[in-house]
Image 1 (tube, rainbow over the protein chains, first blue to last red):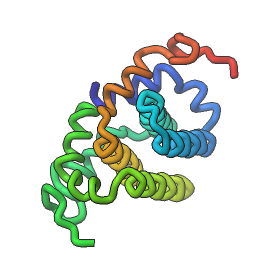
Image 2 (image 1 turned 90 degrees about the horizontal axis):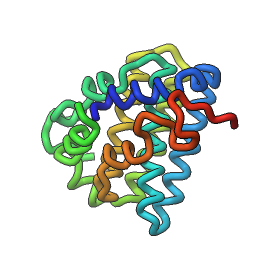
Image 3 (image 1 turned 90 degrees about the vertical axis):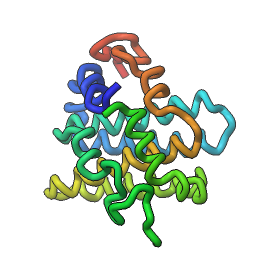
Image 4 (image 1 turned 135 degrees about the vertical axis):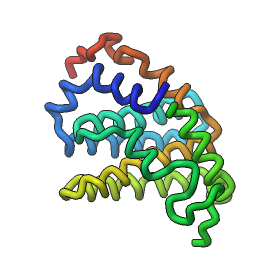
Length: 95
Length: 95
């Protein structure tokens, strides 16, 4: 599924509630989901960890919907087959 | 671009470095990128905010590469045209 299709699916499912919650409240949910992913990464339950990965991209897409940007377009404007810092593929940054 | 294609692009660009850093170090980078997104969301620079959205999905994809999961598959197993909690579209959860 394309990134923008996934974002659109999140819009269909959650846009009304997400809009009511607003950017700040939805960002806080994203932070919570990232923390939950971090907890699962410490353990051994791969299925549970996969669900937390799903939650993080889902909340990121929801946040993009409320903020009013196309997550796919934004992603490909920064990352498109070369590192945005060194312009190489694979990245050759020395930091 | 499909989610798994974006993840593959991140792999081509960054897998060697990401592998050396490991899951914990890469998760910490993801947390930092989410914090940077939060800072930009407080401001008015939409272009800068879009770049932070791009960074968050990029680091999430990098983390998925190191952890060894397909982010698209994981996402669609949890979210696929209905809310995973109430099984409705749009979501009708009452919490």
